[in-house]
Length: 139
Image 1 (cartoon, rainbow, N blue to C red):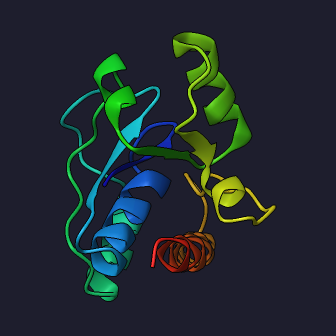
Image 2 (cartoon, one colour):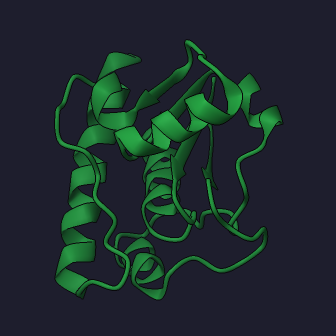
């Protein structure tokens, strides 16, 4: 199963989700994308620090979401606004959900960009818990 995690710039939340997903769902094809990014850029230093701290697999460099990504089995956005932007640009698709919506949680993953290390760590733990629920849903 191919799963794509999507956020705004593909530098904070979706790379964390990609790394956590690769660790918790090793048999799945996990990647991440941004809605507004430049391909090949580095992820945020705070996200990378957490990835190293928790011994997670390295995520890919930033990549812009494209029409080809719609072929993934599951596209999980960090917020409703990300989902709405995808729908507005590419139309209604049955494989697009917010991560929270897909695992029956109601708290969106807010952007930690520019915030403290503590906020990044809270974001990490939130994403980890959501992906644990995703794993349970698929086992």
